[in-house]
Length: 420
Image 1 (spheres, one colour):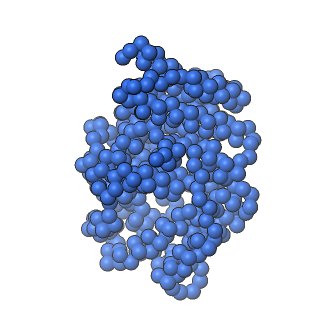
Image 2: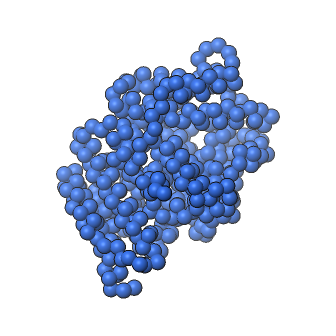
Image 3: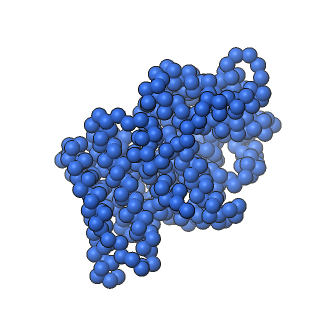
């Protein structure tokens, strides 16, 4: 390495360390902010002892952004494109951190302004008529009297996984998703995870990445879990989703390159759109066709759950329509956060337009109240990742895996997904 390249790398590494320390400092004010950290333990200890004020964190973030702008990237190196992505990543993450500081100090942002500031993206807005058209198709699939959400809940009861069989079903789904991932991607041989079943959470599943290629995957059992959620959660939280995303960042960027900014995961940041988007799209990467996924579920998961597989095709036809209602949660969140509707109205809106039963709608509203515009990272994130990968891979499944692996191991963020 030349002297110039070494100096540039050293300067960037200094910025990266200061960024990590700022994230840890902000975590002292926002318990949800630091989703994962596996860097030097003394950095966390120092943050806990110092307890920097929000004003001090904001001031330092602004200075660090200026420093980052003045930090050169050595041109003409084999990985200069990756290093440019790294600098852009730090810029976006710092901007989001500064926005989160302002929010914690009391600044109120509209839904779209908040998602732009925190996640580098804005979700499309859909009128009620968009969802009404989809709901009309559901009505024809599930005829009868009473609200559609009530008929839907009664209709899908036979597809609920009994609690005593949940672990067997999830373990089978994870085993298959892991095998499919390993056949296309090289993972560290000592990677591992454990599953915990929890209650009283505003989310359905969560991956807590602990470092050293290890995750704790939690599944919330407050509400009934249906058979399609097994593969969804296994792929999203595990393989090739969050678990694989985090361990590849640790392996390829933190350990191999000493890019310490990836030793911390700031939840309210652009990184989350990539994390959630790849986790959701990972289901399609693992099971590239609906036929392939249904064959596995009919032959393995339905029997493991003790569910009759003869109605599987009918069930998934309805689930395909339900997925088209994904953006309804965004509309409820947008209206709630913008002060256009109250909590009770948001619950009722989700019952009507997202076809959620009251308990599930209330859980979703709790999620929105806690995580706010974060909801866009799931549906918009998935759509952006899908377009980005498919533009590069076409219909070639092997190429799709290759491009997916590259994205999981890179600093690319939402604006980078949109770039030509």
